[in-house]
View 1: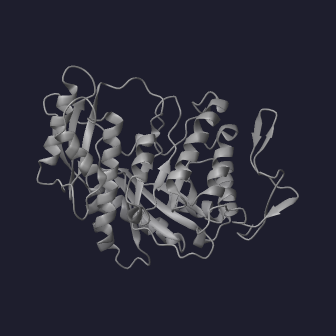
View 2: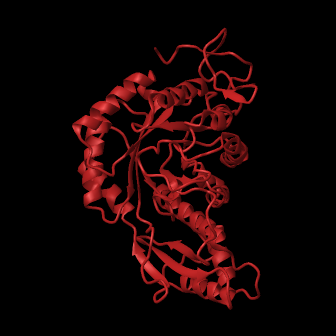
View 3: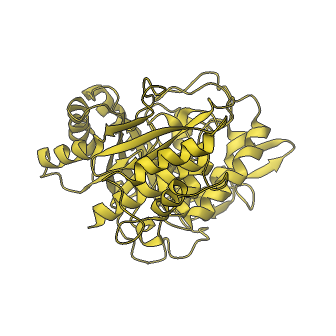
Length: 411
């Protein structure tokens, strides 16, 4: 089946409501050419697309979506975020494999929860480039079909599939990708060393999708890394085995060095930790300088690489959060309380530690974002207002990180 085949549907909206059941598009009398129903101007209509220089891998949370929308527009135009819909409830999902049965108990509640969040993401993206990974919800067709349809037809985001997913979900994503005219991302985790068996599986998946290479992106995902040597070996093997399977539209290498846990925070609430993503990417470029296309840099910003596997509905937090700041080669991390006596003063003191460090970029000039201005105001403010919260500190962390990385990659 070729990319130029026509998709058909039974209802005018491609997602119909029959009783209490949602039915995703299926073949019938009405035909549509790929890309025919796109509503956003300037995405496919002959407008030159600026190739991204940076792929931030972000959980689809309020903090991350809000942060992205607060990054300067000229920098957002050079990014292509890879969003992952977080689970609504239940246990943390394992990375790189599906839980059977799915822990989501109520598809009606999932639909009501997911719809406004997808609409918010569409608004924040405003037609710009990127991907959306729906691995935690796409099997729940009744709860997710309408939202994924809206995203595929009203945004510049491409859907994502992968080797670990059921054949029907891979086909579903490919049909939506063909219908939107934007294509599809294939996300390949590199947690284990790539081998010939997985290369053959990926080749089989590519063949089954019936999309040309010009509509496929290879998203190599190294996940959480604690050094650049071992992760570099896996990344190199992944590029050799998977990158050689076709003339991919884009090839991305993403990794995340932000730590999931820090020990002895009570005794030592401030830390400086190393960023390994840059070294990983640099070593790959040097080792495979002859690779026929640019391998786009990606990272997980200032959250750990498993954050998108953690449900949105969680128990009350531990009573503290992390202020986070990105430097040229590391992260500054400061734990601050969110409740209790003098918690505001202690939060401001943690902000002062960041803004008084030699790595702080100041409040004016090139490379400075609104995050620096917020941190400075927090550090030297007074009273109980504008000291932030755990969610606000994550948001500020994302703003400064995305701004810094995009600015430096563009220079």
